Structure formats: structure tokens, C-alpha cells
Length: 117
Image 1 (cartoon, rainbow, N blue to C red):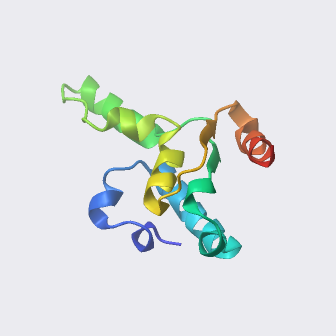
Image 2 (cartoon, rainbow, N blue to C red):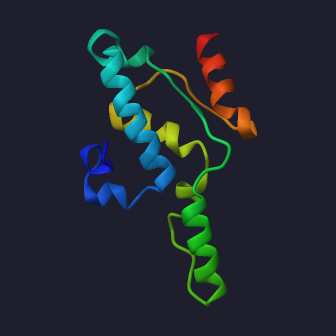
């Protein structure tokens, strides 16, 4: 699913690619599950597994800074791993638990396990 079907062009610029991918995956999962049609958003949580967030932004800003440019004001929000879960919760108004698991290669598996507890 193209990110343009989930976010406006202005909103796309506010996020790193890893968040775009998370939003597209969430759109597909929410549509397939039908949870938004049957559950109260207060009880719907977001559990994300992310070993490292925002690599594209971090790399671009590091190179730009080394060449004398200023670091962008969105560097931190674009690179911290928990921004994917936050963006999903904000986009769909989900108010349940919002957890990011960052345990290297097992992040996604751990997130699934935690969501079932």
C-alpha cells in the first residue's frame, strides 16, 4: 500500500521511512482484522517491535552536519523507535497500551508475545 493512501504529503515529510512502513502495515492489519469496527479505541493498544528506527534520517542528517549544515528539528522524533507506535496510535485514535519493544532481531517476536499477555 502506498504511504500516500495513509498520510497526506505534508504528514509524510514529518516521518522517517520506518514510520511510513509501520503505518502502511497497521492500515492493512486494522483493515483485515476489522477491530476498529468492533472495539472501543480506548481499549485498542499498539505493540511494535523495532530494533532501530530512523536510519535514513539519522544518516542524512549526520552527513549534512559533517558538511556544515544544521541538523533538522525533527531528527529526534524521526529516529526514536517508539515513534512508529505513537504515529499509529495518533493516526487511528487508539488509546490503549502503547509499547515499543526494541530487542534487536527478536523485537517483532517479543512484541507479539507481549501483546498476547
